[in-house]
Image (cartoon, rainbow, N blue to C red; front, side, top):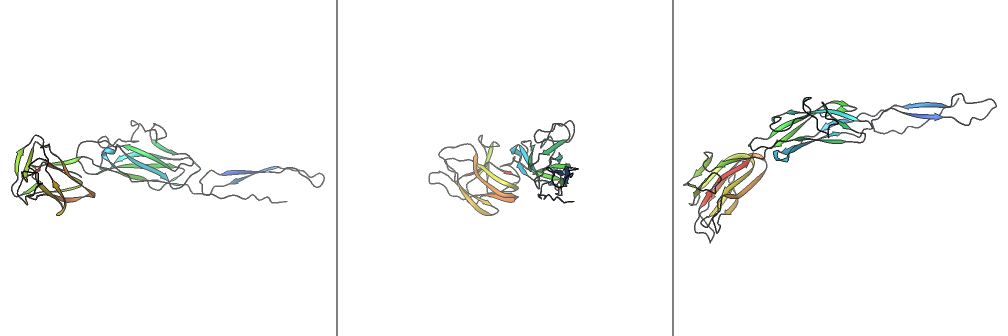
Length: 301
């Protein structure tokens, strides 16, 4: 009686149990000795853990048309891997802010990434695949609003474990809040005069010429813009953010024109800031005056 040993090569791939066949041929030796059983099958039991399924936490602008979630495996698998997905409201609302997926049999599943249009929506990873993107359509509007969230939930994994079962998609607003020159939220110091002007955003501007005249607005957002007018009698204005001078703008122009963007500022993250226009009482040598107009201030939350 002899022992035949076959070495097994270990790997880290989750896969089905496999078989190896040993065959005996060419018996020899003593007369009358033959092979009673010439083949045996050995089974190699897989001992590798299945991969985990995770999902990221993306951010997208309302104007980007989609928020893209990436569903990933923590390791490569030798087996097909599946997981069911569906969207859910956070602070954002389906049909108003984004398009729902997989919430009922009346909502078709997008193909891809779903394996079929039938309900429920299922992601299918073929052996060797490690990531699939799920693009949720975002609905743009013209309504200023706060940053909102929607969810992509995963459940019923196949040949995998569910390590991260929910992704939160953050949708940032791309609509400006417009504050007209007449708004009570703007604080004026010294004398500012209202004048109708057809080229202004709201049909009027407020102007001042005296040095140290100020107009201030406190807002919460991530971007600020100032609209003013230019002309042959316009002067210089200092722009302060949170009490610190960040720019001096020369409003002189050889001809009068409609109100236009004269200053912008982006912030690393949304926050509360105060923007101030300070009339300097100085002018370009070509200007006949020192007037500074304020048409409107607008900001992104």
